[in-house]
Image 1 (cartoon, rainbow, N blue to C red):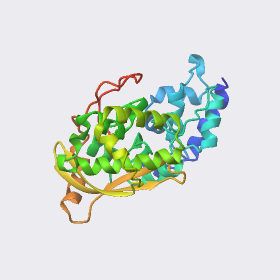
Image 2: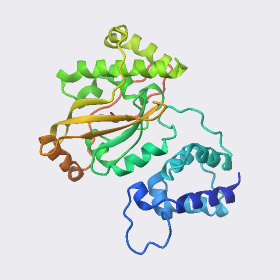
Image 3: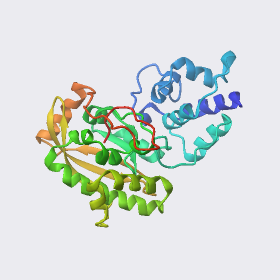
Image 4: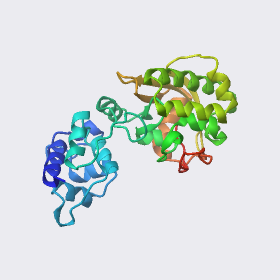
Amino acid sequence: MNLPELGAFLRTRRDRIRPADVGLPHGPRRRVPGLRREEVAQLAGLSADYYTELERGGGRNRVQPSAQTLAALARALRLTGDERDHLFHLAERPIPRSTHGPSAHVQPALLGLLDRLSNTPARVITDLHETLVENDLARNLLGGSPAHRGPTASFVYRWFTDPRTREIHPPEDHPHHSRVFVTDLRAAAARRGGDAEVTKMIAVLRRRSQEFSTLWDTYDVAVRRMDRKKIIHPLLGVIELDCYNLLSEDGRQRLLWFTAPPGSRGAEQLELLSVVGTQELSVTNNPAPEGVPAAESGSQH
């Protein structure tokens, strides 16, 4: 493992990023051209001491970053795909090849847009509705996204297998969301060319959910780009919002954000989100199906 080269690479990537690029205030007395070490550590969910050791080439502790740590740093430093691969190469870790799942590399263009949406709930998700990254307002609105793996990482999967997942929406809206999820999933399955991940998910959903199987057999297909949603918040009650989706060029990831018309009750409730803070929604997961590890509890949308 070439720790000195890895540290130098991290340092040069950090120096090129302005605080505003990642949604941080510039602040007075900034002595570095880019981000501070502690800011990168915060963005990546690491301790400042650990990140400092990485930049210094491992020091006496000879730190060896895991694949998860490298992926978090790639997101925090807004690395391109080539830069992410180089980071893994320097750390002598296998380069992730999957473009899907909750550990997928977030496309920098979507991350850049997310950073600028500081006043509206927003998150980047995959085409299977697996959350990759989100801002604080999205966590306040929808609850923090848990660290799921396998099919249970998909909100669509949990929608049809765990009734508690649906508590975030009024019951009268459930049929509409079910239809939208299935038509969007069919479009994603066609775009992926029937890869093993989505094929297995569809097969399990057909076995576990009669509702899903019936909707799937309609062969309706439509990529979700905009929707009107009512979200049940534990403190603010029912919030009616417009939900927009901006798809990446290859359609594998999308930026999802919520807004409301100026002067509406929804707009007033969005203003309050930054005050009430993150709330835990009462959404957990059923035991995983056969062959799928059990997921952690939590809510996601």
